[in-house]
Length: 421
Image 1 (cartoon, helix red, strand yellow):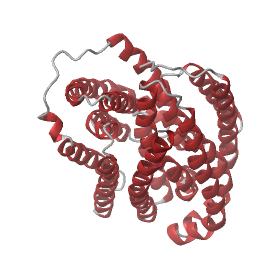
Image 2 (tube, helix red, strand yellow):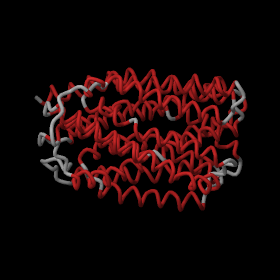
Image 3 (cartoon, helix red, strand yellow):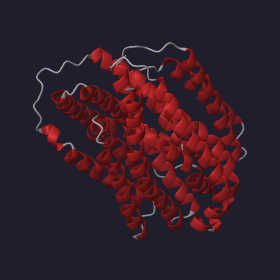
Image 4 (cartoon, rainbow, N blue to C red):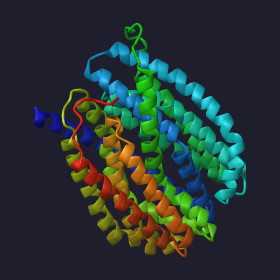
């Protein structure tokens, strides 16, 4: 039984990994094309807006985790009717939240633009529209994830990034240097929602279970727990750009760093290919009372191992790649590959850890340790930011401490037999 289950994990991971590679290639084409079409300062601004859309998308991540976890549990019980009802309820809630979020975020855009040294707050308003749309998308995309339709779930990402590439490049060539990529983000997000609705259309016609029993107290507790997971997850993956944009003396430094991170973060994207498979399978095993730590060990072995191997490889082949792909304007990024790798490896491992802990609802120690780690990072970076490399070493060191503390805690803590959500 154990071998069969772990085989399913690896088989599904391979499916997601294969399709994710196509998505990653398109993402890299997007970065390379934008880097060549835009000046380093404009390229840095576009990446800042992209990172802001992801970090501000904490609510989207919560809806994602909530939808994937609960649909995975209903799917494990063969309860299609509950999945259909839950999806409809989530759609109504996410639509209401999306509208409220957008209108509340408009006045906040001015101070955010000031902190990030963005001249036009309207760009931040555009980002908040992208975030609002992204709050609705998980209702359908993460239903696909929860019911283990991993092929359309993964292809949805491919479709999104491909549409964003075509729209952004076309609009930039037409003269819309910053607003073009923003429009590309908006329209590609809408297209992704339409695709996922089509792929879950059978659930709209499934027999509806009357009076689906949802423990609202339990959901609120899970919502709060997931908030911390998602906030720290998104900060790790994209907060580096925002922190560097805040403290960098020259706007072009952000663009140069972005070109280096395109190469250095390959290991992160490869390692994260197993994440969509991990969350629903942990939720399923937890709901049946099985120990889930074997899944964490295998996920860390594959994901962490891939991240480390790729980090080494990128430092060997990344140097000529930057000049070849981005041109002489970005050659200063070569010196950033090592500190980027030092930052990326703990991010990859912590991302795996978050997606393991999320369906278990175990956020207490993790949230405290991450908050302490980020406070330490911010204090140190605010005092020591003479170079981008220095900031990256501080961020990587802080996250390594957090990772070590959490792995020790999990190894020593007793395994819960029943799901907490």
